[in-house]
Length: 310
Image (cartoon, rainbow, N blue to C red; front, side):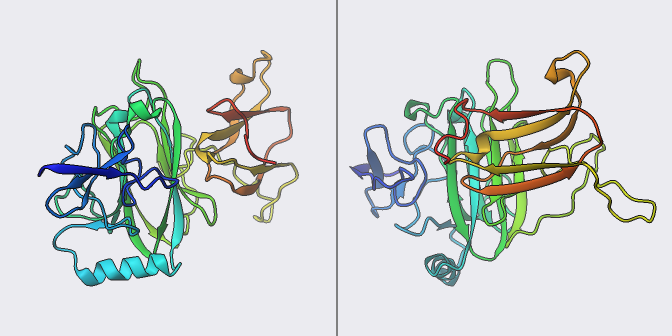
């Protein structure tokens, strides 16, 4: 990269330089390209990232390759500024090596891992352990105009966010704020994981294609609706849950377990589960369950409950 000059960070809520998430140095500086004044996105060391060399223009949060047309950039910016967009939330729980992890959202089906030329809408640098991201949670909201996008999460060590010994247990969740639906989530993914989706987001029907007992998209146990003799749905025993998430919905999960004879709740089979969720969202859930005795188990990764929720 050319010689660089330094300037103060914008100091906004996302701690960013020109709209790039977590791109300030520990000294509170953005690094500027001395030739044209654009902002270098900080990678794991200075501005050495090969994938993200230049920040987007101030206020747009948008970077595109050289083949992208000026008209496409203007259309995207106009849609965002005009409020014609849909919020998606990226929730992260980082492991013990946050400097190995980054994510991106690109326009269309292409991602920067597999393709040299992509239309980059938003991205993070590798997370800085010196900024308290080691085993910490983080959220980021992006407003996307109607269209097709690809979310990609990358781990430079090739071992995902979980569950290598000594690495810790992290996870990610991409959610659609309007409905609170999970678009994609996971923790074990090797080098990278990618999910193409469209907004407005309409979730597909529940499906357990691999037969592991977990719904494929959400990774949860979803009880099926019992059928009456005439083939219609019949629910005589309903489990209901009213939940309002706090500012870190990615931290929240729960299980409904059948009571075990041993008395240890962990021995009981899971008959329903939920989460992770979008943040600051009200959920009213209902499932049909068989008659019996159950234990409801609520988990908060940060161990601070639903902090900040009235």
